[in-house]
Structure formats: C-alpha cells, structure tokens
Image (cartoon, rainbow, N blue to C red; front, side, top):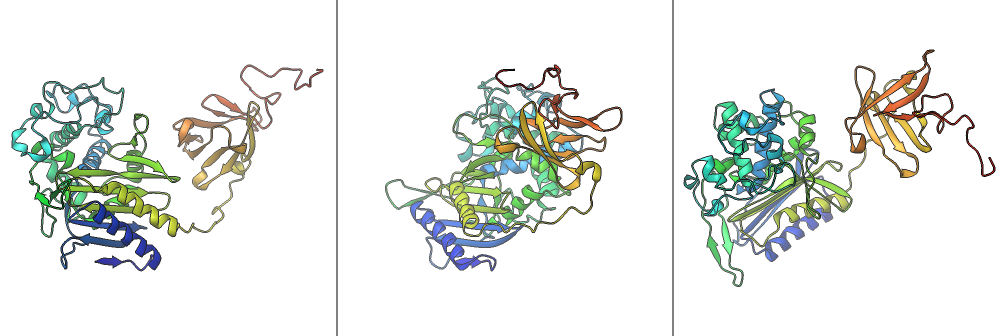
Length: 458
C-alpha cells in the first residue's frame, strides 16, 4: 500500500517504495511506515506489512523512543527564551537535591554532563516506571561516569532530569507542558504519551526463526521525557518542518537553528550532537534529526535543510531494521533523483553606495580575500582560491557585523576609518584587512617595513 504525492516523479516514487519493501523484508519487521516531506508538506508516504489487507499508513501511531528527547529539548529552550532559565545555569538552581546539581542545563541538553547512559537495573525500557518513582532511583549510586563538560556521553537519565526541570519551572507535568506548548500549536494531534488507535503493536522477532514475541508497553514514569512518545509519520514531518523553519508560537527560527548547531565534540567516528538533535554528514549533505528505539519499535527522522527534504521511517520491531538509516536513504533518493530547483537570481532591492564601496579584494597580511554584499546588509568574506578562513556576517544596528559560522562565529567585523572619513582597514576580531597586502600607511599591527617589498637582491 502506498500514497503517492503528485510532486515526485514516478521513478522516484518507485525507488522509495522499493527501498522500504527491501527494508521490511530484510529487517523482518511486522510493518514499516515511511514518509518524505518537501517544502513543509508530505510528498510521499508508503507502508509494508506482513498482514495482507491490513497495512498501516502515515496516520498510524508507532512508538518513537528517543526522538522524544528533541521534544523535551524544545520545552527547555522555550524556558530559556522566556528568561526563566539560562542554559549555563547549574541544574541545582532550578531543581535542587538531585546530587548532580553542579552540571549545567546546556551540558544535559548536549549529553556532556558525564551522566551514565542508563538507569540502574532492571532495564528501564522494559519495566514499569513505578519501579523508579524518584530521581535518585533513575540516577543510582554512581550517577556521574565522566567529569562534566569533558566528552559527549549519551545519557537517558540526563533527559529525565530535563523533564523534571520543565515540571519544576512550569509547575505542570512534562506531558501537559508538551501538549499545550508544542503539540497543539504545531497541529500534532496524533502525538501522545500513550497509544491511541490506530497504532502498531510492538514485536520482537527471533534471531534464528521467523517467529514473533509480543513486547510489553510500559509507562516510563519520570523517564518519559527520554523516550515515552507515540507518533505518526505525518506528525513527525510536521515536526521536521518546525525544526527547519521555526514557529514563533513555539520557538523562533534562531532558536531551532541553535538546536541543530554542534554543541560538543564527539568521539572519533561518532555523529555530532546539538541541543536535542543528532547531526550526521555523508554524501555531501549534513542531516539533523534523531533516531529512536524502545522494545518493539525503531524510528528515524532526518532533515536536510539545504535541500528542504525530510524523511521518517517507523517500524514495530525491536531490532534488525535500521530505521534511522532507512530514513536517511529515503531522503537521499529524493535529493539525488530530484534535486531542489534553486530560486532565481534577483538583484538586491536597493543600492547602498557606502556598503558597495566595501566590496572587492581585501588582504590579511599577504593572504587575499573577497568581500561580497548579501541581503539585509550582510557581508560574505571568502578566501581567494578557497584557502583560508571565510564566514558570513550579519549587520548590527551599531554599524558592525557579527560572524555567523566557523572560526569567526560571534566575532565582530568593523570598518576603521581615517580622520577624513575614508576607510583605513577592516578589523575582524583584531585581524587587520587592508586593500593591499601589508599596505603602507595603514594601521597594520607591528607596522610595515619602510623599505617595502623587495626581491632577492634587495
């Protein structure tokens, strides 16, 4: 069964269907649902099932496991944006008595607080949350495995603490805050803490025989912010569109951009992590999103901002089907078969002669750069020949610019003028850029040799 969006070519739709058919067969999943979104709407969805005539669709609920963490991170960022917390605050400031209160909210969001990956036994995902009624039951006797801030170490208990933080600051349950502040504004009416029909049942498949075992469905209690949610492919594509563009009713575009910015170094060979979002690269693309699993279910959600494509894969099997990989491959099929058509080039709406005069060739010492004018009075610094540090800069009301990426992120670019008002040089975080390499007469730190440039015999 498949629902075909009219925006994709028949060959692309067939390739997508083929990929999920192979995934369901090879992964031996009772069922698999997938969907692809583009420009904020669903352009394809498909499903495969082992039950004839009973295929799920993009509105069928599956458990999404750790994709729940991204929702929890959104709630925390909302508290920050309202001025109720600061990400550098120690947890103790808002949630005292945990025993790990010195770790910061930012460290918890990006899994650098050094907390353990799991709770003490028994296995929390397959047992009722009533066995762990308090935070101390989640953290155990040795909650911190590593010094805070030193490394990325994925932690389910860490997101339990963040959910408890939300409850402490908001004065309502994590579930109520999520429903009221995120799910309802985004129209995600099929995303819930408990399953609501139609929904899939969770199964384990025997490793050496084609037989199945039903998995338990547990309420995770205070661990819910780490992995409780049920959702649908359609709802997750709505969430993907929000994570790309933002929504001022929930989080601004700048805040969701912060979520998908790398926040902590990772181990060699690992994927990056922002604030509640995983970041992966490959095939010339950077994807953000999250994977998820709970006994009986696997899930994957990925977004490519540059191509404006998102993909979801959901299956009701404990292991064997790499849902996150399948979602990434579905996204890749669309991007490679039908790359995004760029917007037409258009001139800027108006000319600013003063800014226009800044464009062109500049030199940092003997290194050559170009400075280009972009929209909204922005500037783009590009090393000539591709060797050197470049960056985009946004304009500030005080007449300076702020770096947006890479080495110069957050650094200030300013124009330094002579007494007569003409431009002497550009100052970028103390680096001096002049029109000529080590230009005589310009305020180059250390001065310029009065004898000037010379040859071998000079």
